[in-house]
Image (tube, rainbow, N blue to C red; front, side):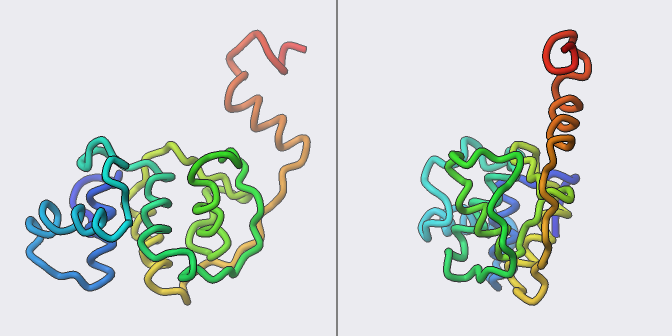
Length: 171
């Protein structure tokens, strides 16, 4: 259940996680007094991981929270994903995200598995992920398409250089 709009906040992700884990307490108390302190006390989030618990949460932040909420051992691999096209391998959250991909909890937003890590997560996306975390039988087994040279050119051209006179498209 999500209360406001399409984009989830960090606090709402914690709240939804706790609801799926059957922590039923008065809504206001759960949000302000229970969810965030519980997440901190149990290593789900670090003390200063979020600058504001009422702001919209980024997709990569949500992935870290769900990974840390359940732990590595909970996520059995159902996929063989070794690359996420729009996440640098050196990103601090890369291995956690790769675990979620391989467990079928997240699979990206297109046939290549693009994750859009810095986009705000929608509540509908959050609900789907919570469902897959809580119910392993609902996890997705998918084989992602690989980028070809043409796909890579199209991605670069469309995302950054289509309105520019400099770069790849100017020769």
